Image 1: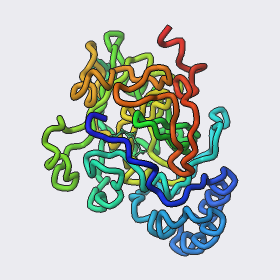
Image 2: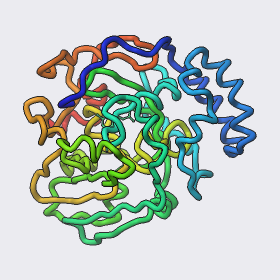
Image 3: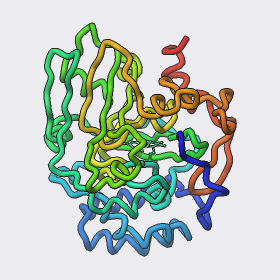
Length: 330
Ligand code: MTE
């Protein structure tokens, strides 16, 4: 990002991925227990034992639970996993992922979790407008009940050269856009995050940024089957630091395209401005596909570091999703 510096070394003390089996067993138990307080407390020990030293990233599931907004839809999670989307690496340790975030509204560092407790995600609505036949506004909980939720395992690659692999829950953006019936004049989709400087303190302090955060995709990108609207993560509702109550996930693009906590979607005829591109066009393009062969002007993109293990892996073109998206750019 314009002012994000790659952290000097990978500051977390010890790193170890959560094997999928561990994540799965926690998820199954959570489902059985229906997220009861007793259930969470009971799990804590087992999960720590299974996941080794990384559980210390958070004191335990109870602490993580304080970042999961409660809603009438919590029983819909975990949703059934779509087996089509497979990973080539273990799922990232949930506790590490929840303490290593980019959410500039709350902190310009990775410690978003320490600045987000006052963030209220209910009531919350999303407006769809612009080049559509049926502009409309949904309350988030009505929308979630209406859409067919599924879980998908996706890799996530930040432009800062770190990556994670996460189970998101949600639905394809295409299904949402269809509700509003896009007109043929629609060529782009613009997304906007909330504006509330009294709780998102950097929206006031970091006055050089053009708040609220905004991003955009072309219509073919927005309608691609990978483009996802996520309302959950790791088998439960979205944590605040990952973009509660609803965010976009575009796994073949650098992470800044995956805008968090959206309130507005607008279909447009002309290419909209985007947050980082407007600030630093020579460093952050509109398209921003993951590409190991195009270095950032200040660092290489050839490799990425997994946030929980510290392992370095070669970066994959389109973040490994070429079979879904390469044709969009040929
Ligand atoms: N969305 C908003 N509203 N504000 C942000 O600062 N940061 C982006 C993206 N979405 C950002 C955002 C960046 S740079 C990345 S890498 C991802 O969120 C990080 O997502 P995560 O914290 O869930 O890993």
